[in-house]
Image: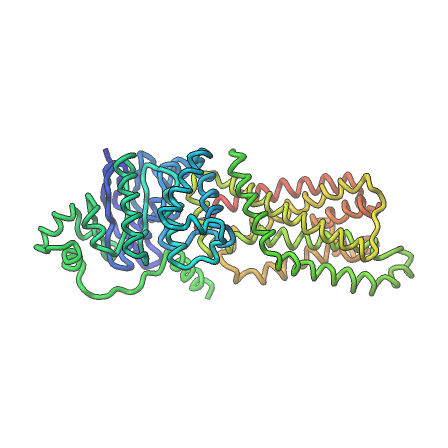
Length: 263
Length: 250
């Protein structure tokens, strides 16, 4: 059963085509890696799948729901850890977790238990009553991930979840996520620049470059296809070795667009 | 409609308010300055013109002013939430935009009401005295309605503005006129026609009038008119605010 179906999805910001006619499917329970260099269109695609952005063309079906037509129902099906910060700095770590739990209607006893469990995994339990504005970048990132794992959705989107974290924390977090995946059949849809992560946990990989899909398969298939012995080498063989322009988020594109219109 | 969701959004606003002590104290400076400088500065002229004690007249206007500013700012905080990324967190959650809007607006309105109550208490030290203890609770209710109305207006504005660049425009061409053309500082009798018409269309005029009626015992429009127009204003702006907020894209 396909939990995500994306057909001919396109997103334009003015003349710039961020996502160019992509199609793919994700099966229920799959650990799906969505890989690509900076600016490839990963985050824009995730924003469209999570109701934050309207596609220019094409269709998305998520858990049998079109997130464009029935946003409210779609939002019940997924959870997301954003690439950029989204915690409230004026609240404590615990309050951020509590807020999320209430919004996602996690029952009180489950909520309390999971908040403790998750904050311990990301080693923020002894800082739980501190305001987030006193946290370092890494601590905020860990809180962000812990919060995203508080409710157990059908699909969990993780947009570069482990960026900037040390290997110890990354291992803890991934083993928790893989446990969720196997125990509760939660589909994992993630992006990362750590090819080792994708190679060891992904059951399916899609590589996107300049808005277009350039390869699809299991990590083993992609390595075989490119005669590479690691996914990183396969990735480089498929996307080339030139460095890309740093990605401007969808919001930045909107802002740039607005400013240009004003002039 | 989930009470828990609305409650946690309300609670967030309250917590943020009590944690920013500097903001609370800072935002008391302006109303106090107005009360002291204008109150004592224009007091003698007001008295000579046969209008009575100016502090008695001015205080409800200054209370309304601090409610107006705090409420609009609470609504406009959505822009900050967007810039700090927190707005996304609420927008992808499985809760309706109406719940988010209501929770935030009730929170912002509570904060603005508290600010109004603080200014009221301070005014007692400047020489303001209430005319009736029985009418006092009604004054607080009117403060809350005013706060609700202008928080909803702030939400509506924030839903349309994408960043703080347009804020100066809103401040000088909407908020300041609302304040100065409301009868907060001067009586509405015998004004040029244009000013009077504007004041009559201004929801703040009715809020101030209701506060004068309940705190000082004088009214221009009458309490019934005040209540009707405030109620209509709250209903319209809550509707407009919810509508514009539902169109927001993070």
